[in-house]
Length: 337
Image (cartoon, rainbow, N blue to C red; front, side):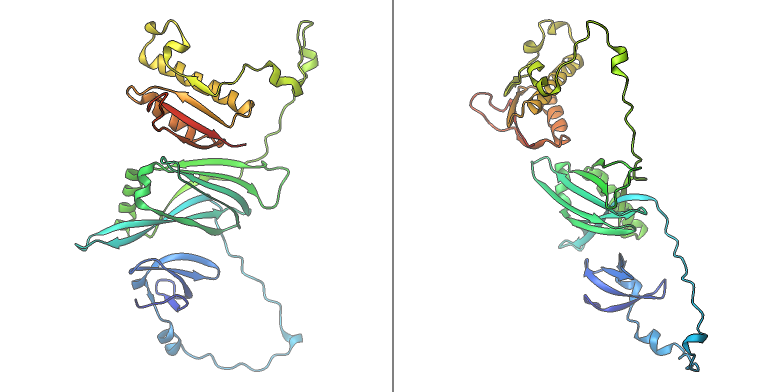
C-alpha cells in the first residue's frame, strides 16, 4: 500500500492537500480536507513534497504595523442545500480468479441542509435482526452509520429514520419519519453503474427539505352537536373498545360466512383488514404479544402480514416457527411500548 492512515496527500485534480483518515481497499482511501471526508482512488493522489519543492518561494514582505492593516473580508463559500441522503460506498475485493466483487457497503448519512439534525436510525432484516443508533449530523456534514455485508441485502433490509431539528423551530415540524427499502438486485445494478462510471458511491434521497409545522384546525364541536350526540370521557375510552385477542384466527371462514362468493383477492383484503383491526386493538390494550393464525396454503397471506409487520415501529420482533398447536401456520408478534 502506497499510503497509510495519517499521511498528507495531494489531490491531483484539485491541487489540494488533505489527510488520509481510512483505508477502504487496495484501490481506494478516505481523504479529509477542511473537515470534509470523501473517497478517492489511490491513482488520483500523490505525496505533496514534489509540489512543495517546485513551488516558487514568495519573497518576504516588509513589516507592516497593525494600524496599517485593513480588515479582510471573508469569502463566502457557496453550498447547495439539496436535502438529506443515505449514501452507500461499495468496498470491492477480489476472488481467487481475480474477479472483483462487492464485499461490504459502508453507509453514511449525508446532511446537505442548512440545519443540523438529530436522528434515530434503525435497519430491520427479514431474519429479525436489527441495528439502531441515535446521534446528530450537522449542517453540510456526513455521519458514518455502519457497514453491512453485501449478502445481507438478500434479507430485504428496511432503513428507518426519524429526524428532528437540533435547534427547534416553532415554524417547523417536531419530527419527520421516512423509510427506505432496498433489494439486492437493485443495489447490484447501482454498484455496477458506479463502477463503470468510475464513481465511488451511490445515494438515495431521504428528504428534500425539513417540513413545516402543520397547524391543526380545531373544529367547533359544540356548534355541530345534536341533542342525541354523546360525548365520552377520554380517560374511559378503553371501556368502549372491543376486547383484544392474544390469538387471532385469520382463516376466511372465521371472518365471514359468505366467503364462497368472494374472489381470492377479496378474501385476502378481508383477512388483512381483520389483521389490522386486532393489531390496533392489541396496541390499545397494551398486549405484550399476539399470535396471528394465517395457515400454510400458498403463503400469500403470511407474506403480506410479515411485510406489514416489518414497517410497524411497535413491533419488537416476530417469528414464524413450528408450533404444536398451529404447525407453521401462525406468526407470533412481540410488541414494545
